[in-house]
Image (tube, rainbow, N blue to C red; front, side, top):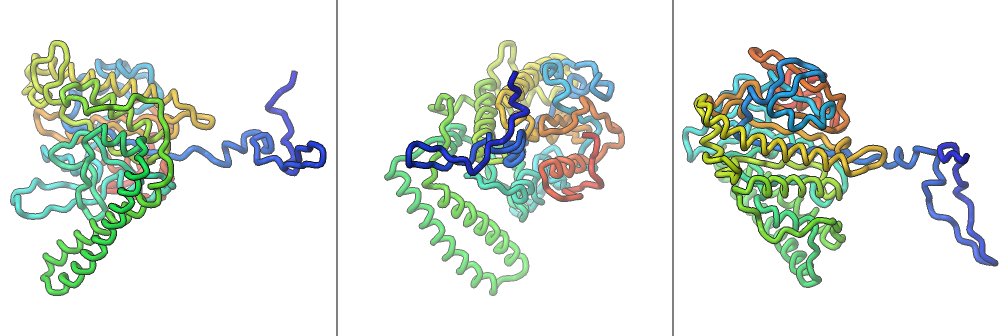
Length: 426
């Protein structure tokens, strides 16, 4: 029996002959030794951060025992089919971080003092998505995406500590990624981009002249504006370069309108699908997706709004209401992990090549606490451990895990945010 694994590669100089005509063969997989095609062009590494802002009810989420042999909890049973392909971390947090509105610190790892003077500027540090996007490289249409349902404070921040706005319309994101414009629309977009760059050049020059006459604090404000201008210029250049390149075609129904924000199943499914498609088509390799407060989610038996249920004050009736929402979210997340595993890439899957981090800035929204954060890491080629149990009284820095994630993505670093070392449990 012929064994394809033992075949000899075809000589690259071989020709196809028909009479006096000779055609040189193009580069074919059969010309390469077995396995070198995939090795020559390995699938890229990717990062998806899923941010939630109202925590998860810890007693229903965390297992008691560490390792792969943990006993499934009420919440984790919805992820049972993926056991061994994800890791739950308990006993991790950003140390000494007790701010109710701690969204800005979740992916930066830097303490965030609540603004007491609304008129005063408050600057952050760079977030994990922006840090990774700057260093991972890759010729993609978008360097990174910040999408989903906006919450009070941003999760994504530039290297100058400026918040990155969230694109909140899934239909707009779909058009941005997959809908080709007419010739007139493309020409109009090109004109808009070129005009935008011209205006930015002029504003930049005038701002530099102005800054020479300002005091230190005002110069700092102007410098932050320069940073925003430079980032916008880079984005415009990238957009112009990709404008005439065809967008990928996807087998997915075009969303005609944004789902009602209270339709939690439809809303979160659409956002997760868009994230998968963006990664699958290599339109980007870094995404921060916010799936925030579900509002008055339309679920059978649910009578409370998400925020009210999360601030339960240990009322068992309210906790059951909260569980209806959080179990729905985890079921949808489990389905998403399944679809990621169905997309083949090389010798693995899209799931294998994508670091997926599901995280929240609160452990207990009712008590406004930020220790023992419910963190779930999936995919990405890690050696998943099921449940990594750190000291729940003396937490390990969550930023240590971020350093490990960056290294897994090929980013050479030993520090990030408030890290103290590399978390080597996975």
